[in-house]
Length: 111
Image (cartoon, rainbow, N blue to C red; front, side):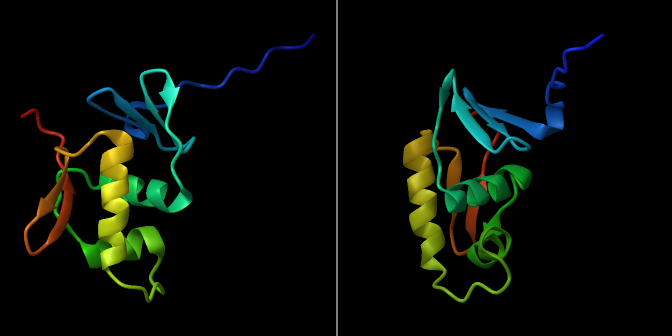
């Protein structure tokens, strides 16, 4: 007797949804509607940091530490470049907010 194995649906805290965008954290997948959006590993790591810490202002240094690793010795402006790519690719220009003199925040509140 064989039984078909089915994957359990992701738990709510493992899937993040915002304005038609769905981020499946365990699967590392990002979709808008039925269309999967391809992100580079670095773009995904940055998005994941913003999602996990949504509604919190995060400094560039914090984002570098989380998404690039503690030993990253590059320029903090690389975060700005990747943020702009995420805004364009994911159509989140209003939701990924620049926090003056701090860094960035993923705002999940309805505006």
